[in-house]
Each structure stands twice: as structure tokens, then as C-alpha cells.
Image (cartoon, rainbow, N blue to C red; front, side, top):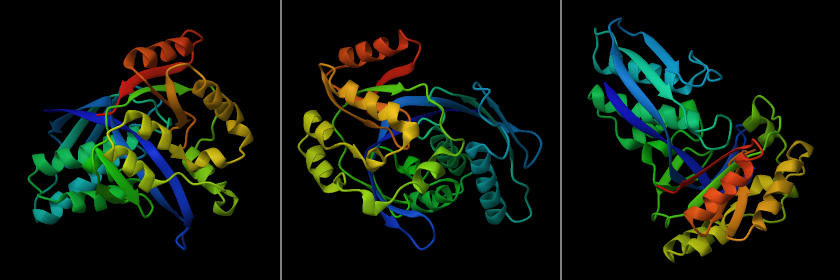
Length: 293
């Protein structure tokens, strides 16, 4: 049995440069691992090549649609390739979800990356981080980041990962506005993105300089998300709430987390982050506090 933490992430910078000929967008991100995490328990299963997933969140699929399920399939294929004539081991996974689903925090991608790393070690497959990241890229654009963790720059369509200097500690509050979002939210929001309509882009280079300064205030000031420049009627209440949160005393900045609708606020202290969270949970919104890992 393996007991593993599967961390959430936040994009300190989310910039989109252009639409590629393959239909994907060329991106430039600074991604940061968080202390908030799901817990994954991996058990061997007697039936060869079988996969079973249990999840504490009934809204999460437990079949081939689950990224952790797909990650097991990928590693079973690698096992068979490296052990000709042998059947891949069966696996049972228990997911205890703490990362909100479809909230821009990479929960599913994190589960996939965590499973890839765990089975690579457990089955002595000896894939390098780069090779694992290439496997992860097939599962989702965010998944390669979780092979590395920490603080990284992500380029290409998100699969080219470069670890960078660690980010100083940030106290974060996340607020999930109670709005309806399309089922395939990420595809939906990218389909509305037109680079020519974006007049300002968050800067990866300024963010790296802010990180190097070890200043929480500088990092907070440079955070940005290109999706906030979209005029999306569905997200109008989210953008209004971001502006409201920015005016709260002790909040250094607030941005859209990934593809949203979750909002990430950087606070001066853990106490302020918890107070902000409480102000939203009091009115039955989903909200939680965490910090960078």
C-alpha cells in the first residue's frame, strides 16, 4: 500500500501567446504547488491488469474518464513493454478529494501525475522525469507540472516544464463563486480567447524577478491571468467579485485561478486569509485557505 499526497497548483502567471497550427494555444505559465492536497492510497489488486478506483466525491468519474485511471493504464503499458511476456499488475486506488473539482487548481491532473510517479517507483520502471512528463502530457496539459512540482515555468501547450527559483511563502484564500460553468470549461474558455483582443499580458520575466527578490508583495503584484481580459457574460460576476476582493484590507492581489471560476487572493497573513474565507463560507460559498508549498 502507498499513501500519497496529491497537491493542488495555482498559476501565478497565465499568459497565452498565440493559437498554434495544431489547434492548441502557445502558453507561458508560472505554476506553483500548494499545500492543499488530495490523498491517494494505492493498493495492489489480485487480478492482473485490472483497475479499480474509489472516490470520496461522488461527482468524480471512477472509470476511463478519470485521469488517475488513465495514468494507471499508461504505466501498465510501460510495464508490459519493459517486461515482455508478463501481465501488468492490477491496481486499486482510493481518492480522498480535498481539491475542488473543475476549479482551476489542477486536481485531476495532480492525481494523474502522482500516480505516474508512484507506479514508476513501485514497479521499478526507471523512467526519467522528462519521460514521465511526456507520458503526463498525453493525459492533460497541466499534468506534466506535477511530475516536477515546486515552482516551474510551463511553455508550449503546457507540457514543456522548467523548474525555476522557489516562490516565497504566500498566504492564499480561494473563493469559488456559485455560478454555472460549461461542462468542458477549459475548452470553452480557450475557444473564446483571441490574442489580438488582449491589450496587456502578465509578464513571466517580471514574475521571475519578483520571486528572486523573495518579496511576497512583489510576487502578488506581478500575478496575472490573461483570461481576465475576456469579456465573458458567464464570468461577469466572477470578475466583479475579484475587484471586490482586491479592496479588502490585507489582500495584496486577487486573480482568476486557471480557467476559473475559482478566485485566488494573496493575503498579508494566514489570519487575513482565514477571515476572508470565513466571510464567504458564512454565506454558503465554497472557500478555503492554504499556502504555497
